[in-house]
Image 1 (spheres, rainbow, N blue to C red):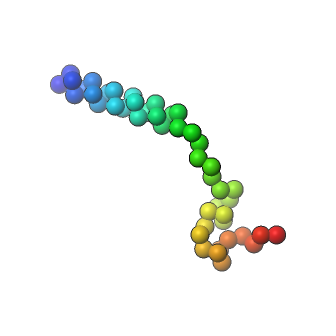
Image 2 (cartoon, helix red, strand yellow):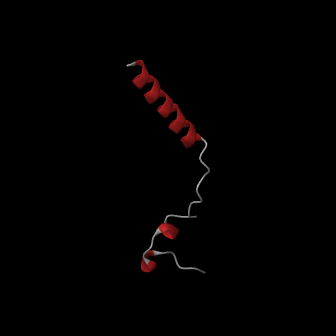
Image 3 (tube, helix red, strand yellow):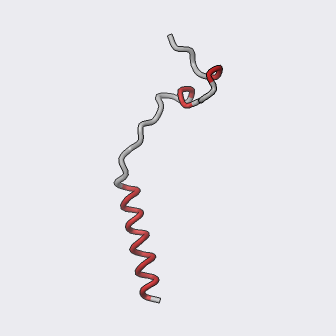
Length: 45
């Protein structure tokens, strides 16, 4: 039982650490730029 609790706690801490230290992903400038349908995208000026 102690082994299982230690394993689960260790994995939880490991993945929590990975989430906190993940590099940020680049995001689109706006919601419209994220849309794949051409007719719904904002016109480019």
